[in-house]
Image (cartoon, rainbow, N blue to C red; front, side, top):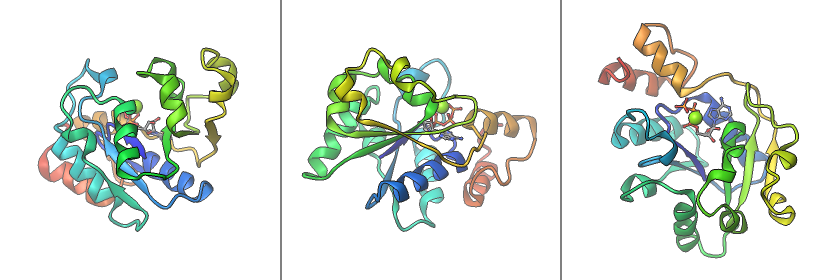
Length: 195
Ligand code: ATP
Ligand code: MG
């Protein structure tokens, strides 16, 4: 599972997912756009339909990648614990991994039912410029030692790309080319998103 707001999806997300797929020999990576992310309730998020279509466009060229509308279809805030629970029911007996970036994993202490979550699946923390992952264990000191073993750091090529920066660029008329897949770029420009 690769969770995110994906507003819009970009090469940072895709590089992290492909790196995790290869390193952990994952059968597939399912990108799950958040319906109503609880931590982003402060700003206006693009409609789930647009974000899901952009995610679909971005994963089309990778046979291992897929998308899910699980969170988009679920009413209320999107909590990872609910998503992982649903995935366990959909794929019984399957070892599950949840891929995040360094910034997201450092916030994991604030996630709903984090102890239970860590007992349900592995977490992969991809490196991300600006969010050093050093001393992860000490910084997540609130998590029990046996559960911290469920979190593995993974080095990926550093891409200082963020959806926030892409949205700002579009708003200011600056280029977003080569920061995200071309079909996603075309979709943003054709639909007039982020203007
Ligand atoms: P925003 O700026 O709107 O927060 P974002 O670029 O951080 O957008 P999200 O949808 O918030 O993208 O992130 C989804 C997941 O992908 C998170 O776990 C995040 O840490 C990870 N991620 C995002 N960008 C990168 C990147 N450039 N390198 C590694 N991981 C990333
Ligand atoms: Mg983010």
